[in-house]
Image (cartoon, rainbow, N blue to C red; front, side, top):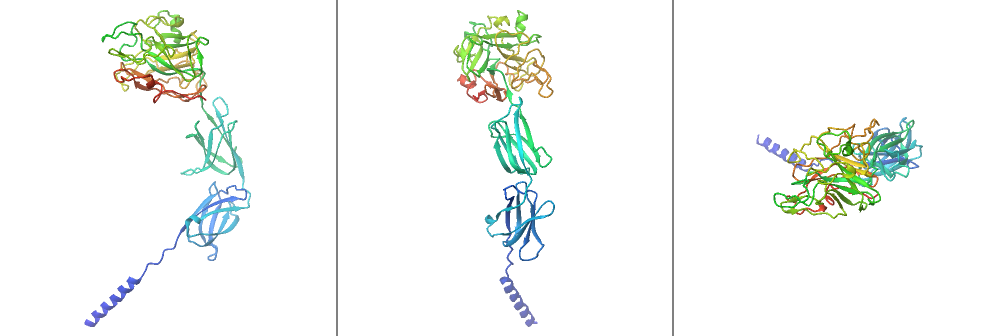
Length: 495
């Protein structure tokens, strides 16, 4: 029995020693390979079945295979470093080429470019860009991408003077077409297009541009200054401040040099506690009407890209607080009118006698503000205005639409024809003309920056409206730079 135990221990020691010397078999090295397949003219061969065979053994055994993309690209992921035979099979299962490849241990070397002397059906694929006036759009970037989950750029180019981009030698397949924005920074529009026999092999894009027909645009307004909005000149506040005039106004921007003594303009304000049937011209037909007030611009001048102001006689940018008045702008920049005592231009609107140019909403914060009837501001070329005169620019602010009496222009927020049906919609409130800018919180002193980007001919970015607290109590260092050179102000682009 003792000998058996000794023998067992001996055998166990032998086995342990043998196990200690045993090593796992080496795993075969597997490498990747990427390939680009073209014909001799450099046209990608898409939809080709690539098969990999051992060159020196197992004839007919397919080691790996892949189909090429519209870029003529394919890849293999399970090949040992050695020599292989690579065959190309077309859609009709005909072999169109064969070559030998060597897979290296260094993966960076396994990049194959293979050309085959075959004809590839390909097409010139055209993209045509036009605006909503059927004018060609030149200099806009257009790119052609694959339709993969992670699209790959194939090629890109800029549209020519005819708004055309041609992608030559485009093979049969489906592609993503990207059209970029005016600055060629981000995708403006994307479309999936097919290329091949029997197809048009072209794509047209109508890119809506927001044209205007004005040399002056409205860029902001102060309709409810903190404290008294429109006091009579010389009136004294409870703190003893002597009012130099009224404080409501509109901020405007010139899109060209204008001499008002040569080309007259007018600005009309609405204060619509109740609707009117004669719109911007209500004061002409009703001598005592305070629903509108017209201010004529017949003297002075402005430069292209310049902000200027039309409103109360104080010419102050954010009224007053206690005994402190806000900065006062020069007459060359602020057309101030004592609208409390003076009738409107061309007798369009009675003197306000302490009333305001624009109505106030209700609510002490922007979150709670409401307004039962919208108010508006319009710019006219010339000073004669009747109920059919169309302004060159106009905006309305409020929280609901209650009337349709006011003529509107074609601008960034209103259109005189329905963009879908083409039906006329010449009045505010008709059809799609329902856009309302924000209403300032009551008696806070909020300036509404309208924002947007504008050129002499079009709006690049439409106006939207941003409330900005602008009073001498909460902003004692208030300056005109706050409403001309800061965030959300309207930007002039001279192009």
